[in-house]
Length: 422
Image (cartoon, rainbow, N blue to C red; front, top):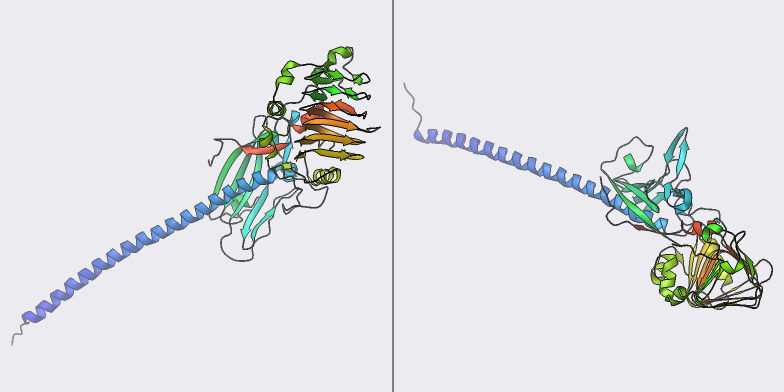
C-alpha cells in the first residue's frame, strides 16, 4: 500500500526550513552587531584611559609650575614645612647653571649612575598624595581603594638657553610605568607632555652704581659708597640731579679719580618716568612685578621690621618682597644673605633707622637712612625714584655676585609654543 504526504504536511516542513534560515540570519546579524558593540566599548574604554593619562600629565605641568613659583619650604611629601632648613621645591629639583644664566635638573647617585631627581603624585579618594624625595625614586602614598588612580611623575631638563628649563610630565592611569620610576610594572595607559619654562628674574639689569637716585643725593653725614669693581664701570653714585655730600666716603676702582665715579645731573636719568626707571632694572612694570606668584606682600603699619623679617625667613631661595605704601625698618635687623639676597620694592618712601643690614637690591620712591652707626650696610644696590638723604652713615657696597644671584630668582612662566606631546 502506498502512503502519500498531504500538502499541509509538506507546507509545514518548508516553513520550518525557512524559519531556521531566518533564525540563523538573525543570529549572524546579532553576532555582528555584538562584535561592533564590543569593539566600540573597547575603543571607548581605551579613549577614556588615554584621556585620563593625558589629563594627569597636564595636571603635573600645572602643579609643578605652581610649586616652582611658591616660596614655601617643603618636606618629603611636597607639603609646606615649618623646618627653616627645608628647601623650596625649586631648590630641591633645580640648580642654577654656571653664571646663573639657566637651570638644570638635580640628580641623585644610583651607584655610578646619575639619575634625574623626580617628583610624583597619585590621585586617591582624599585627593593627591605626592612625594618629593631628596634622593632616590619618589614613593607617594598609594590609595587603599581598588580601581584606577591617575598619577604623574615629573623631571626637569636643561633648556639649552639662558633662563630656560624644560619640564617633562608623565601621566598614567595608575602608579606604574613611567609614573613609578624604578618600577617594572606597566600602566594601562600613559602620556608624555613637556613645556619650556622661562624665568622672569627678580632683577633683570643690574644698576651701574651702589646708589642710583633719579633725584638728589643730599646728606651732611659721612655716607659710604663703595664700588671697586672696574668691570661694572666703577660708578659709586648715579644721580639725575645734584650730589651734595661733602663728607661722603668713596671707594672707587684702583687708580680712578673720585670725580669720575660721582655721576650727577644726568638729564637722561632725570627724564625717566618712575615706571620707565623701574622697568629698566626689573624688566617688568611695577604691577606686573608685584603680581608674580613668588612675590611676598607683608602687611604691616608703622615699623615693618618684624613682619618683613618673618616673611623673608619663611621664604626660600631669593625672596622678592613688595611693600605697599611707605616702609619703616629699625635696626638691628638683617635681611638676606650673599647666597640668597632679597629684592625689596617699596611703593612709597623707605626710612631706615639704625643698624639695618641688607643683602640685595632696594627700590623705593625715596630713601632716608638715619642714626646708622657701625654695622649698617647694604650689599648690592639702592635705587630711588626721588631723593636720598639722612643723618646716618651706612655703607653701600656694589656687589656684583649678589646682583647676579638675584637674576636666578623670580617666577617661571610658560614659553609660548613650547608645549609638546611627542
